Image 1 (cartoon, one colour):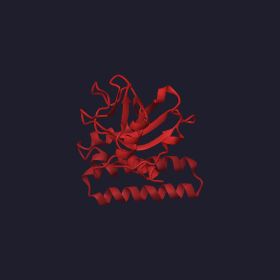
Image 2 (cartoon, rainbow, N blue to C red):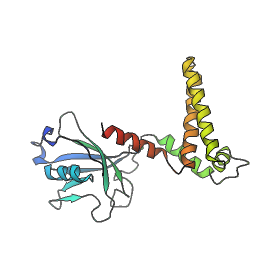
Image 3 (tube, one colour):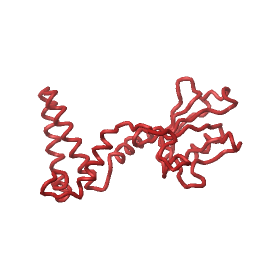
Image 4 (cartoon, rainbow, N blue to C red):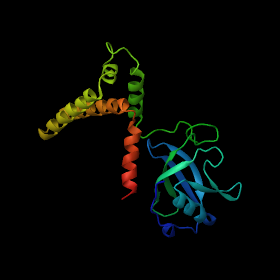
Length: 206
């Protein structure tokens, strides 16, 4: 369970009959998942359990998201807006967020880094290709040390381009580094979302 420090007393509870809107965003890819409402009790339960709770306006009771489906929202971070009357919760869903079975309650919700997701999907698709005709398949079929070597080589190229002020070279070498890092992660059974989650965890612990 992630413990998130947050001062509920700093919020403006005088508006909305003691209810504040909560926008829930996927902590890994930035997608907006849903909009809910919280009161003090629901917020305290969220902070105490590490799972997002809301106040149901239709049922007139506190409820834990996913209490029936099991598709809970694990809280990563919580922030208030400038007026203290709305919240942004970053969370990791345990399944589809919407009752329709879709990842988001908002159709077509965009991810924060769609091209990286597409590139990861391409790498995953190439994993089963012929190593003789696919560079990605060749790397994934090789020993882990080979993928690590490629990341190291690209890292050196990035450093050299930065040190010499070669901005065009830096852009290109950085792109190569990111590509090979994604391949390395794929070979290790990880995804870029795991890296983003680790960054979010470190930020939340500050």
